[in-house]
Image 1: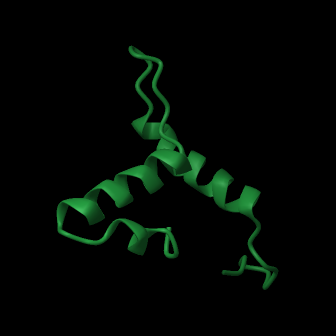
Image 2 (image 1 turned 90 degrees about the vertical axis):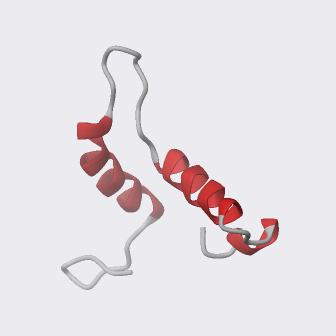
Length: 61
């Protein structure tokens, strides 16, 4: 993945993008934040729910 300027996108850059878009999903009443970890966990759970093997989600996630 690359930025608009053609530079490689870093892990922290991806985190900042996710946080920017997830900020609208944060719940101030319960003080719960949406994070990249939550996205990864949710994707893994959905993969298991549709019958995917446990280890198959490790690579793409």
